[in-house]
Amino acid sequence: MSNFQKEKQVIHEYYSALDSTEENNIEKVILTYTNKNYIWRAFYPFEIQKNVKTIADSFWRPLRHSLKSMQRRTDIFFAGQNFIDEGSSVWVCSMGHLMGLFDNAWLNIQPTKKIVMLRYAEFHKIENEKISETAFYFDIPHLMMQAGYQPFKEQAAAHLIQPGPAPHSGLLYDETDPKEGLKTMEVMNSMINDIGSWQSGLPLEEELARTWHNDMIWWGPAGIGATYTISRYAQQHSGPFRAGLSDRSSTGHISRIAEGHYSGFFGWPNFTAKPTGGYLGLAVSDKKCEFRVIDIYRREGDKLKENWVFIDLLYFFMQQGIDILGKLKFLDRNVY
Image (cartoon, rainbow, N blue to C red):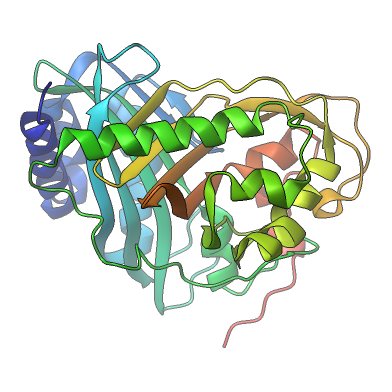
């Protein structure tokens, strides 16, 4: 089994080069660290890109222009063999915030001239010491709320800047015991199997207690929010989520990895479902909508303790004809 140090080193060097280079050199940096068939997946409105110049011109340069003195603040970093392809590929996961001074508009989100933090999570597939695929998911509505906008009608849980792991143990730069990663993968897989198509037959809180600690923390995306303890998670997210959606498809992941006490997955999409009315203030719809998600977990003992979640809610709303970014100028804004 690989200790993943070579793969991690590729991402360390890539981040160092990307974060320190000038805006006009971003394309060259990406080309240096990626292979010729590179695939980049990102949340709406950026979508799938295969042209490095487009990635640099549409995302990185505008973001760097907007968030001045931008720095990467990494909370979780780990790698692993992909469970989905029976370990034939290795992926590196990173999660944290891109922090900067919001001095210029981005995606028509008006600047505050103050510090802001863009939540992000990334998965990178490494082949022959090059990045061949990236899933880069970021919480744009969370940034909008920091800028004073209220993009959603209601949010059941709390809005806050989300910290990293409670024990500050998320940066797995050194080798770890493979047995711990296997334990973490086993618990995560059990949780995924319990979720299934929401047909476990158990009361929700009993189902959750099989794989979660009672004092679990669910760090959800803006629009849903963060929640604490199984009972509040059931009340403020999981219960309303299941009640507000129907015809959930089976789960589909592109990558699912674990190392040490940390694990995660992403899909494109992870699953589809139909809105039944009420959830996030949405009306009933017959259209199956895609959910693009990154989930990252921390295991403590034999159960999961923390979960950081990234859901492309802008795309979820867009599939139902609601263009939140397009309606920015009509949204209420309170800047303090």
